[in-house]
Length: 106
Image (cartoon, rainbow, N blue to C red; front, side):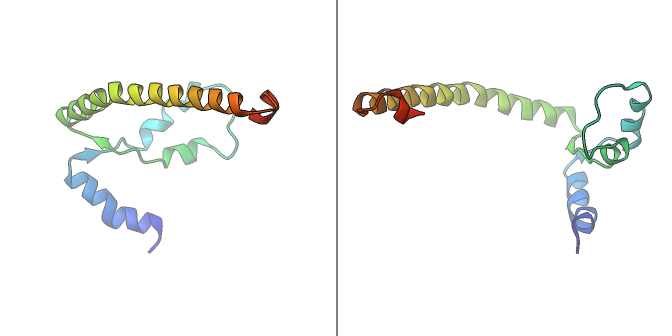
């Protein structure tokens, strides 16, 4: 069984049963008529139309996901700040113990 068959036989029905949906592929082609810009290598409107984007079709479920992600924002920022502090401390430790100065750190 290849990836497309697996998705069609197992994943898509499970997502639909869970209340998730995806836009129709035709919706992607409507914007292409007036589009301009740089072509991305190995990408075409046909390939983009084939992309399946799953999302919860219920707005209540979407709101729950947004609320959960919002709750994760502060702890994530705290971890990023802690990481930066630890990185600065490590840099200072390496610099203070190095006999060669900045050349060793680069």
